[in-house]
Length: 87
Length: 87
Figure 1 (tube, chains in turn orange, cyan):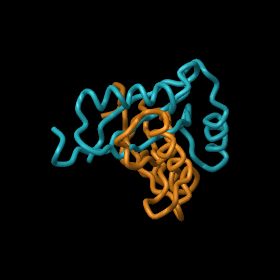
Figure 2 (tube, each protein chain N blue to C red):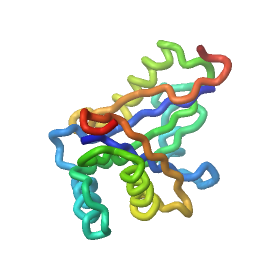
Figure 3 (cartoon, each protein chain N blue to C red):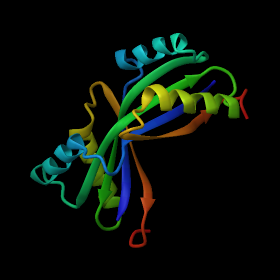
Figure 4 (cartoon, each protein chain N blue to C red):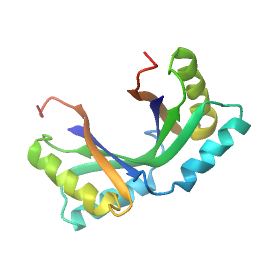
């Protein structure tokens, strides 16, 4: 059993109103020195069995087709925790 | 200039309907072997100046007060990219 994390963020050229709202609120709230904020999604997938290349390729496909909208979003797939079974 | 990432996830004991919806849809879509999915938020903050302990403490406070609802959410703060100025 392992945890695979898929991070989905808007592409840099796409406007991010959520992130902008956070960024604009910060000085008002007393936090200076943050020049940009982008907000995205994080998916934590618990994978049964070993996370080998085939499994990662499958998760990549899954992320590309269902978790991210690749027209406007980029995603990254990372193995975060690998338990005994997997390498 | 450095990028600090704040990941905000629902606490493990809090039901995550978004994640469950994704998890339940996967077998239908042809992806087996994923036993759990949790969905959370990822904030990428571009910080001016060095990311020293004081800056990280400030970002921690910011995350705790504004980015996460600590009644139901956990968050982690990670420095992702450090450019020349910072250590």
